[in-house]
Image 1 (cartoon, rainbow, N blue to C red):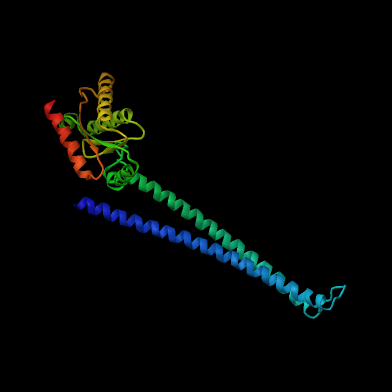
Image 2: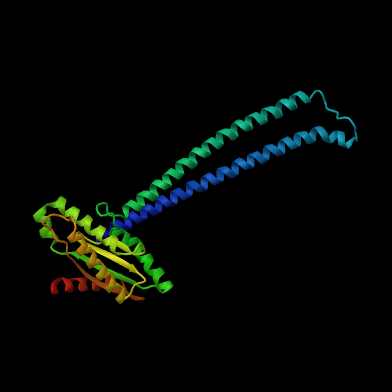
Length: 271
């Protein structure tokens, strides 16, 4: 129960962070709009100033331009000052906007990388339970919508506790890493590998029914045989127990996982 509460709290924090980043993006867009509005206003002021100079000549149909000498220096000085001040303001605002965008992009990249890392088990470089709680549910909805079959394959390392006791925790960690590598070599890129527990892994096989799951287990057994025949951990022989269940439309994920776990346990006890 506490794990689900923790996941829910982290999800709420991530949502708040996303809302904050969206608000900052909106603020930058508003500043861009304000900047262009000021530019349009300056153009209108300059156009009005030129119109003030040219309009009297146009009204009187004068062939030569005629200016009021008393107001000409003040007008030119005012227009030049306005242009200089506006350019200074624009340069400063553009610099601040560029810095704000760079910081925002870096923060978004950092948050995205941190979110990806939070879904990955740091030891085995496979997905963790948090990934299953957040992503697999969406995959199930998409599978139901597109009519794709999903098979959940539960995998347990036989006698891992005794191996951990015999060889030590460092070797135990290495065994976990090696098992994860064997799983990655066995399954397809479209399949998902999750470290479900301490010595349990879950493989979510996309577009796979019972027959395909049986073939996948056969490939896994062959990969384990090759690993044991190679330069493996001295004194250790890898053995895995597997059980699968196919997700059907309208099923509860926990029921499917329980069925796969029970099938795996039956294979372990019968072996």
